[in-house]
Length: 192
Ligand code: GRF
Image (cartoon, protein in one colour):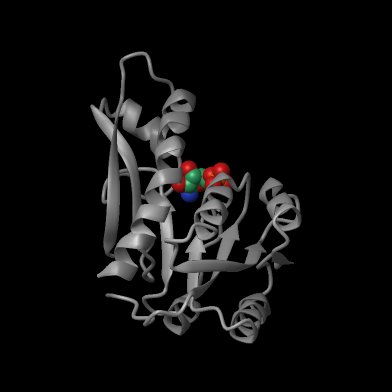
């Protein structure tokens, strides 16, 4: 799956639920000359999401939809179409999008997951990797498909698990790599 854009800048929406450190790194990347994307919309399901502050700092439009009602997805789709968004980056977005929603943006939704997929899909990845005595964990950028954390992999980065690592220390090491991996994956899909 390759997204063909010609030489046009790809209007992108980032979906968040929490801290938004990946959002921040994507915004910084989007401002570089080499970036194929511009970020024009931030969507959060959580009004308390700390990452929403980046909308104010970087002057980007933000919208909050709790996704507690089925109609919320329709409202999001409306916003995306209105703003001519052609790429969605999920970045710590904790809601599962419906099949219908994903079909509407087929091949145009990316996600970053804090494990070496297909290992440790879902939540508590670091805790599970340590419990299983894995030597490595890491992060994955992948296309979003209707099956959770199972879409085609774009890029991965391995991170060594040390004997004294806790899920917190591992999360920190992996997050640091996530901030580099997401921009790299975007460059990869648009330069194919
Ligand atoms: C990241 O580890 C991401 O991989 C996971 O949730 C975390 C979000 O962190 N899905 P942040 O909100 O980008 O700081």
